[in-house]
Image 1 (cartoon, rainbow over the protein chains, first blue to last red):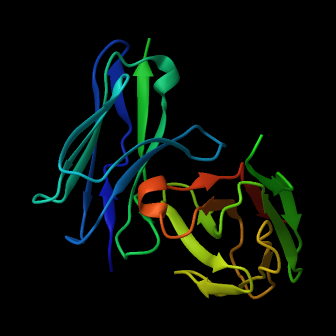
Image 2 (image 1 turned 60 degrees about the vertical axis):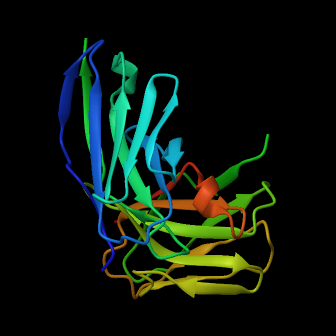
Length: 110
Length: 115
């Protein structure tokens, strides 16, 4: 069973701090990974994707991928209360469809 | 604006009843997907379709059925055989063959409750 694992949280950080969200996966052949943000009762929205080893930055968000360690992370700098949501990690693990992790609930405290 | 429209937003099902969830997209995407989300769990794939008139079962297809008669539409029927249908249902789409570099676009979801 190909899996994506995430700590369910909640992860609480003070406003202005860096939030670090982590994800591990089971399939070494995985090609790409996506981070989605999901507010309570809403559908997921794409934040970032990454498919090369290393870092990828977009505004306050940085995605990191380490294929040797089978590890993906999302850093949110200068966290805001509006960043409070569940963050889903998804990997293209089976060559066709994505496998989603259970999500990490982030709470940014004013 | 292009996007995916799911309806209804809320749906109530009586025991033994079949219900159909609508999903329509105007993004010209070939691939469409249905996921189920339960509290504290990730999205689980029910069915997916890469082209018109063809679809495949996902991880939890039992008790569900789909059709893909048009590129734009991918309705999901929750049958009476699905014993625990209360969940949040999400429809998604992507261009065929490049979803690994594109990701999915999601609809706004349908919350189904058994009464």
